[in-house]
Image (tube, rainbow, N blue to C red):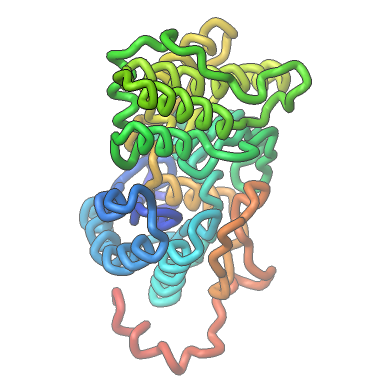
Length: 372
């Protein structure tokens, strides 16, 4: 870690995790998270309004905790990065507003970055600089995507994506049918270790010869599993929860890894990065390792804590933006719930940092007194 490497704070609020990370170059200094998942569990899923309120309450304490953990002062930062999309509109707005306020008060460049590109870039914190191009499989509650990134700061190309339910969404829905609570991923992963993945032949969506080779579909699988469970209950039979969990999980990770390895071969890329919350799944990691090794592909998967939504990934991409002299965002940066992955960040106008001082007279007192 060199002292001249960019020191960047990242803010992530795309869903229900308030994440604040601080990195210097590709070295992680702090990763503070405040989660509202327990609150949402009562409703069986994330409630956007509750998530937004939780972000609002957790933001400043989480930023202060990260700065203390990193042992740095806010004035020493070289930039502020924030997830500007995609995600829940209200939740994103809280993070973007906070980032703009800190960037203005500290007179630091602001970088609005893409949530999906951040999930790829976080691997730099664990395994060093990303190869170029990077092949990435991103799997979470909202996304199942195959992406080719020749330049993580400027060129990310979608090869395939889910056409209906994302993988993580399917995990949550099946967990609900099995009365396992929310979120569903961790508990299904745990129960599946004690079940037989070959016990029930659940379908593999979009794997036929005429199907899109890199797209995903888990809606049919979800329906098939739900109907199988309903039929057992209607017949008065006990549902073998562990076998159902293992067989369902195997159907998901089989499709994910098969398509990812195929994309690597087709594109001539000799490595695969897997990110997103579902990348914490133990069976996905094991099967990916097995298939990549067989195909001569190097597998890169961050540790589970860096797979779920976190501020470290946003800071990692922000630091890369600074290192490559990418143009900062304007203070007019807005949240974009459907920001396309082809836009790794939202650059501002050509002039300067894009810091607009049209209303300096309104904010000058707070700016002088904050973090001086």
